[in-house]
Length: 269
Image 1: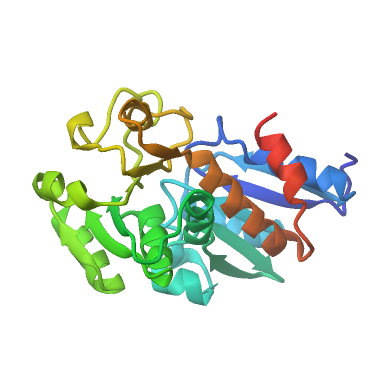
Image 2 (image 1 turned 135 degrees about the horizontal axis):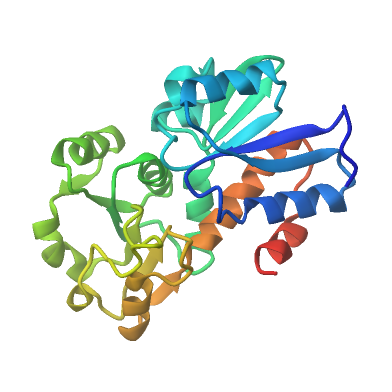
């Protein structure tokens, strides 16, 4: 890879900048397609100034993850239709100085789930109501899933449930709701390293007919997924959602076709 004055920079804003697998995936794809692009992490100390840096330095775009997916919205010029209804972004594109936010999280999560199950008509319990959870909630409803949202902060969870037209419950009601659920998704950061000995769901609530997905990618196998395997649940790793949302962002960054095989191989290298 040759870096010069024409190199297009794709940045990354998020607390996982030290452990993200995005660099390997995108840079392998850029190299394979002989694109003069590079994907790099940025340490964000002041989000507003960091966003202005995208514009003023001519950065082509950035990927966005926790804790900035919602906070960054107010600093952007425009949101695409999907990001607008979700109220959170995971990608920012610099269109000649105009910063446009988008969101591929929900579509990525749905693609990961559909590798193992259909969603239409299934009862889906979603843990969380933050940026990633919001994206997943809308995407699951788009697939005609029967969605139940569980969140520790009642007001935020209830607001999301109303926005997507689903049911909201508190955690003390989870044991009853999970009995006939088809899919359980942890869309919170609970279980992420270094606090990877935690889970929002007790093992006793899991059953073998349940498909369990955890969006946490570090560690790959969270406490929730370990428990789910022991209970003979089918599991979906967070890195599958990570992969598919990244694939969808590739075309937004470059405007060209997606080298899926190259990106997948680099993720698991």
